[in-house]
Image 1 (cartoon, rainbow, N blue to C red):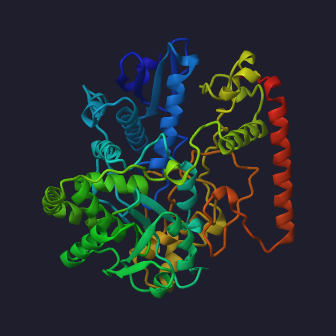
Image 2 (image 1 turned 180 degrees about the horizontal axis):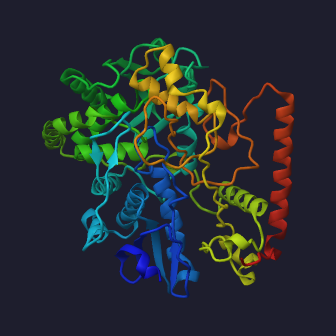
Length: 553
């Protein structure tokens, strides 16, 4: 009986949406009255050290889209929708953050109303998210901090999931594509520090020249660059291209002086256009100062600002930088109140981060790009499909994955185009090539700062593609193989995809237009052949989709 395995249950929407945790890794079966689903293996945070979340805003977006499809599906119109998880502390906390945030965004709940059912009665307490420090962390943020951050960010217009370009987030967060993230719309970008020339460093991190960012910055009205780390490129590179450039150096891993804080706030308050801020890795120093601005002008608490920063750019604000933000909270709130009285306004944004409408993109699901993207998903599903697979005979199936023969008709193409690709479980074994890049060997060669180590961890994802689950227990900062910050999409079976790295010094604006160069004619030919096969398969899928019949497992 599943009730005997139930550890906790929360009613998020009366008689409709529930969040439950099972004592074991239990997969309940769907019934005529109840539909179960889990995201524990779909959305996995890949850590720097002991950190395990929160899952980034793009994962939150994908979760909300998934749950909205279930809530609006005619197949589940009269069913209870149950999001289930296990008692694994990190997975349970991330799952609770997702469903709590959904309640705020789509069910119009206040943070307190969304949080209450998650902790009511004898529900076991939740652990807290920790920072990306090497070694044990004493700096935490709670589930409620994250839900509060989502609520305040939504009210301030920081994001709008009805107008959110997930592909842009997923593309530019990658090291090879710029390693940048929007934090506040039309105001702040956080990114990793450029170098004088585009190159791959000894630790494996691919750095970019200033010129790499020019096109993207211009298209997004970035007018000012603020550098917080030591000089490794000439400021004139940006200045000669028409950007304003400011230096506010302080030591890697440290906190800014009062003079630097005040100067940073002044620059941001007097600058027309967006500001791109970087240190070495674009996480600690960068996050601390952007967080201070958010606290002053949007009245976020220190912990709420940190939560929002990590939703946008995982790993932001490290160690005692969190304590510094908490210490500055009262002063920043006071200064913010004075500012608002003086100008009689609270900043509000018309467009959220990664807005499509802002750049004139069609947000309709029926536009050509959206259709091609969905058809590609169908094609991948057909590639990896195993009809009548015994393994799935008793497993829990998503309504978007398996339908009866009657649903696979041209009149129901919209449902078919929402088929999700079969999820691929992350591998635990790390490739030997990645092992040779251990941080211990690099530390012996040079004295690394916090930013160097964080950049090296991010670089490792380019040397192995199998994702690995978080491993419980203390991580040895020298010997343990690091996990790396996740790409935002849920796991997919990409066995047919040829992954290459963009070595170009220019930063393309659209990921779908990227053409990656290689030195090998053979590799290039193989890639073209794979592409052509996909095109043929896609056309075939469109032509025959109305007659395809999937055998129910």
